[in-house]
Length: 494
Image 1: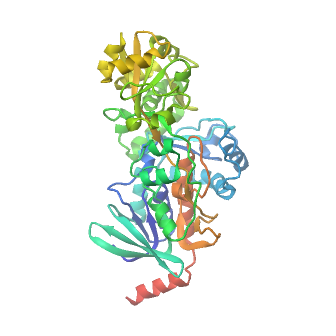
Image 2: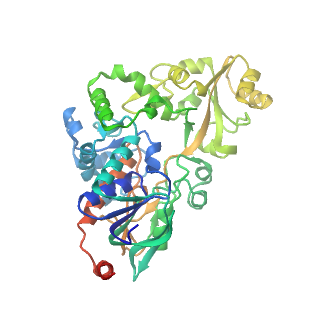
Image 3: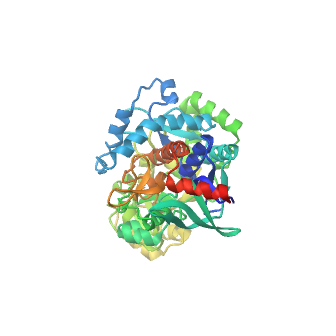
């Protein structure tokens, strides 16, 4: 790869791709580095919602919205401790989320008409069609068209730090180790640290540290690189979770197997925006039972949670945290026919994607039969699940459940994302503990949340896309400083 670039981006998830495309389209030469073998990051594990205000899809649905309302509503989640966390970044998100969604649409990303999710007062949750893979496919196409150089299987060993300024990175790839320099900035877009067991144990509660990561490759490398360069880490103990989640199906659902051809996605987008919601319910249910989490209301209605040995280990007051302390953070939800019937009709659902649809017991029985096990007695249920019959019998005996029984699972205690990040200012430049910038170093997406806490559907992808696009445009127009001019002079001399 060439030695000198305008912008070097580390991490090829949503944020890194958005930044690379925006910078290249604005005229910058861009090198995008990815440690893994493929693009996508944590984004490909998501349902794909993006929360944005002031979009053309909102206007098409007759929805009036503005920046101030979005800011207020993002802070209005009860008991989340969000107020005042990073007001400059929250305003940046609110002001630029709409333009970012329109930018994605221009690149061929298709969305449904927006849906409402409380406490948002109007519908802002735009859902990608057909799945989150579309983000990566369309941005990868745009990156190729704009001339972004993508280096896969390439790890950043360290940042090049000269006189307090980050000017490049030492990288190791298939062809060995080399040093790449950046005239206008090095960008950290490496995601969260939920896959790094050492960092989880250092910063999170015992229960959260033991939970399983959604993305095992989210190793927090950007956090470590920023800290080594003098950057400050903030809100490292904060997260929303862990949460109970069912495992993936034995084989990918048909929605996940659909090709992401541009023309096909365009047709799909037109269909979901014009066909009555009732006609799309089977499609939505397929998505829900593949991706969603079981509600804690199951336990308030009499279901019990056992570990993979069949032992009931708590009172299900905080089931995800309780399960994270058990072997493998894995267990089963045990109920009887009465509880199953209760959660087979409104208002008692098993899973929800707010504003889209609900999934009931029958939806799971039909859409995810691998997660539903029925039996006339405890011993039969234990045999079918591979659990210890005496332990399961004792567990059921502590409840009011009566045969026949139903089990749902396996279910896992999992972390979706961590909220701790590198402190950044309004220009997304990394900050030191004394408030001074680490010149030449920027952070976006999960690693660049800067203390901003994001609760609810669609905010993490929204911030990743928005911060990436905004920074890419800014870096392409960034004046060269003295060190950058020196890099350019050295390149021209060579």
